[in-house]
Image 1 (cartoon, rainbow, N blue to C red):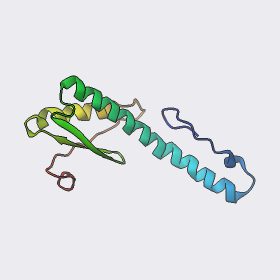
Image 2: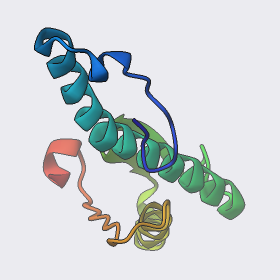
Image 3: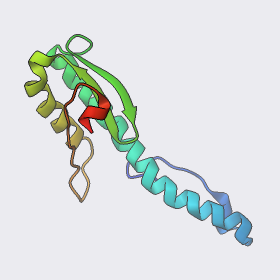
Image 4: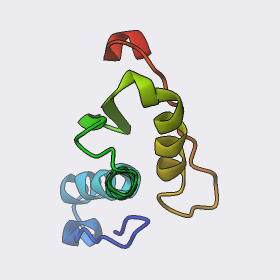
Length: 117
């Protein structure tokens, strides 16, 4: 089984004769394709965002990537550049990987993660 970026997960039990072995391997195969691909995409997005922040001179000065939660990136952004930084981060996230469907980032701004949700 491979992710959209070609990362492989070997599941030899997927061809096993016993359903007790084959069933879990089949579930892992589906999970790998979906969650493994999502993991690949967010890692590429993180790398691209960091490169952009460094180019703009914002990295660890005006913008801090605080956390990643599943498919979300959480930033602390200097208030004076929020209107400039948010569209740049969105652009980098949406262009992380070329897929047949568009990647859509939906940035939210708030004084806390809870407020931004």
